[in-house]
Length: 533
Image (cartoon, helix red, strand yellow):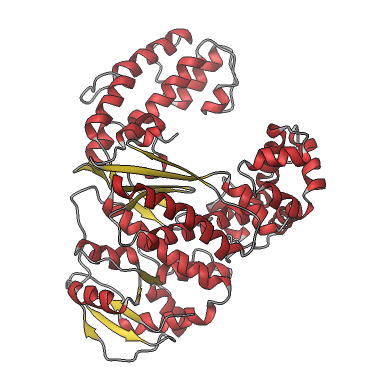
């Protein structure tokens, strides 16, 4: 049920709304102090154009809010549901569509600010937010189009918007001194403006083994030419491709590639730019990719390599509680498809072992290959016999992904459990490499229905965890796909673990009802992120 207590906020004005989104009082001058007072007294759902701007300003003024309706995130969901994926989603664009006016493009995506650089305040004259009247008219139109599960998706998206802003402001606890020690152990001492010792040594070794003086191993073109002269023909220089090659240079090449990636993506320069005051603060983007998974702008937060995770350290007197949803996507398939056999397997701790015992003669590896092949479209070669066994034992699960694949192959749209819609085939170049064939699109849509629903499960989980920890000092500080990290006082660790487990149960019940499928969390309370796995 939509809450009666709703307040729209646009620029320096706010206005109380009824449960239909209509105004019930004249606009008032807004301020962080007034927002805080209303939040304490009424706990409304705040309506605004974009949490990344509106909520960030409030949070920096010391004001947290429990819930909101993020217009832009919801508009993107509705546009895609109508088959208009990627159309401008701003309040101004929505108003133009309603009135038949020219639809303005969305503003270019702003890169994240490194620490210490702020932005215009919501309540200042320099801000240019949407006006109240067009925000209200756009919201009323959204309400008419939000029905069934789409309402839940809108709520999950809006909760994600709040969490993303809070995590970006809270920051990941990061020890720059430990980071330096880890890099020095891997690469050698820092060289101002130059190449670290270990990389330089490896570059010489690679050049000698390939008899290619002056070779730059980080240049794919140069490396392929050198390999070709050495009698090795490869289609590309990706690490997986190189690992298939039998040549003395390969171990050094693999090590060089791994260390070079750490040096360039999370090396000393990265730390100088992104870590300040013991915190790494990226800008998170809820639904930043087509499946609804999050993305980030700047800092590469979703790709923190294991080699430097030891620098993610809890503050004194605190712990990092790291929770990982094991085998999430296969469990999502079991819950969505309603397959009784797969549901029984997903009720156990290790889904693949249970699956193997039931249909694959105890062969866990074969069971895993079959299920992943069904989800990702790996239907040929060595996977074929295992897939045949899967198809016979779990017909509903197989039919579910096959239907999604067939729809995609013929150019149709598929939707997640709550209603997130895949891009149309006319936009395939923006989300697949090159002009993908119908078969490639089928592989995409086959997995989209699972991955997008997994993203919805994760967003709902985060919302429940945030609610459970509202009055605690514990704060969520990191999230990627199926993993969340909570930074909390040692005294709150047990409560945080309980909240995570309970939130997982509540999420499964809310999304899938009385399903036998379980979504267990692997949880560890540690001092450093590197200790969690």
